[in-house]
Amino acid sequence: MKKFFVTGGAGFIGANITHTLVHAGYHVDILAEKNTNYWRLKDILPNAFIHEIDLIDFTGVTNLIKKIKPEVIIHLASYGGTPDQQDQQTIYDVNLSSTINLLNSCIQTGFECFINTGSSSEYGKKTIPMKEDLFLEPISDYAVSKSAATHFCLKEAHVKNLPIYTIRPFSVYGDYEMPKRLIPTLLSGALTKQEIKLSNPKNVRDFIYIEDLVNLYLEVERKRPTNCFVINGGTGVQSSIHDVVMTLQACCDYPLNISWGKEESRPWEPTHWRADITLAKEALNWKPHYTLSQGIRKSLVWFRNHIEFYSQERVTHDTGNL
Image (tube, rainbow, N blue to C red; front, side, top):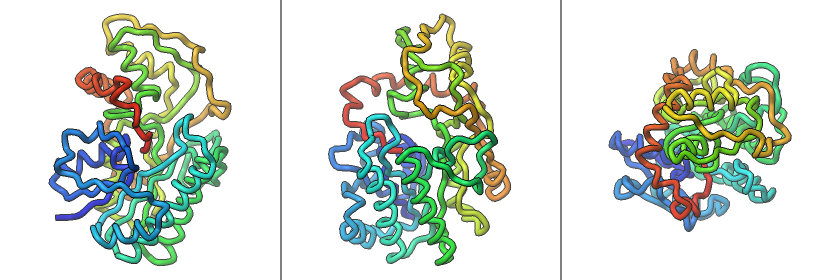
């Protein structure tokens, strides 16, 4: 049985990957912070092995990797992707130094595949679809730390001829997403018929449904291409917040209570934000299966069946990891 090791396995993307792997019968070890709320994993905890250790502790990480000997590592632990995570030193410790520690430990032990998680924010502001070989112009500490980690992984892949990849997710949404992000805010407001406070309807993103992104990770692990090591995780379609609202409105038989301009837009909001996914299509034969409408409809059903997860008490200690 193949052994997977998922850092940030209790976070949004990590939990969805962990659910998929556990249901497929794989052995899954999870790394998480101490005092993590495991609300996303409560129904599979007996089948996942949890380790609470700080990735900045190189000796501890090395000892753990030697003990569990994972064959596939999916690295999702991160810090700085939400407005409340702005401590500069922690951003670089978690996103860069910890990635270096983890990869060095795994290289010592040996592995079949290592998948790092970058970010579409590495690109900075662009006026064209974002392609993996574009010059990076990160404009936040989070984006700088992510781009540095991506380059470290890329260097190790080339110099040591190892299967080390980085996936750059765009705007992921779906099951178990963090409660304060756009689509959970919309879905929760729609289901409870409460006021939904939003910023600028013209703000744009490339929204990708979580199931499509999970499939991309698994395709990278299965196919392990030798000619590309950084891959976008998007749809190639740009949508505005207004588009998302109208898509959700079409799923409801009552008007949504939307209040525009009640939330402040971030100062770096782009006018273009779209992934070029040519590389994923050509190297992996991968493409997203869900349109925005299909993903929103599926998310609405899931949120309706799991709205209790989004009470304040249940998510208070959510780390916000990917």
